Image (cartoon, rainbow over all chains, first blue to last red):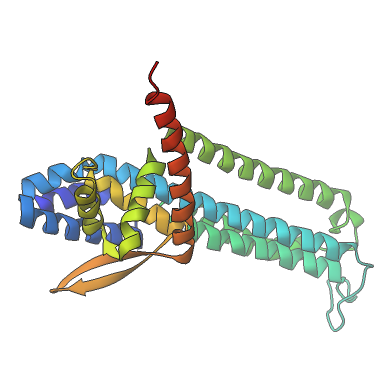
Length: 201
Length: 102
């Protein structure tokens, strides 16, 4: 009876290490209880697998959201730091040579590197969220990886002296604005979803 | 309801560390059967309290059986004191209303 219950519970739980831990705890609990009241009664008192799993998934979702919030906070912090750095007077990176045979401007390097960091953070965050059992995490990771790989190629293709492609150009400023709006919207959505869920509970 | 059960679990663990099954037994015994919780709901709660930093846990092997043992952290102790006080105020208020005779 206990084995059947565990088999029913397992696929309903968040994946990975958390699933293994929950299953091990549940099994130890059921074996202890069965020694006193028998397997049938132990399982009945434990409650339906779907109900137990739903509560575990709820916790996993909360953790996933917390991870998303932390990453977004890190991203916003990074972005702000980059913004401050770009406000400094333009300098050039000594010892580098750009496509036009001139030293590469520091702001261009900073911009390319920082966006790559953001994609890298997305990969890490996506993996963390996926590990917490939220399927969306894997998609975020893949998107981050694609962005991380694609960005240097784009940078090489588009980098030049044209002001529109500069990190201080209008296009870059609009992109930053959109980025901040998206991050803010994501944070607000997560907070609202969490509040709704707590209120429902 | 979850808040009340969390208080009960924290209080049950204040005495000494225990694994999930022992926590439930302790609650049942101390309440003389009044708190006969659906046992499966206690584990997600233990995990949540741990994620909130109120509990700490580690594997404990006794008689060849591995069990996850939970203990209160310093934050957990502080939270328990705070929730106890809240509960006393709440219970007193309820008693004043419900127990009042016309």
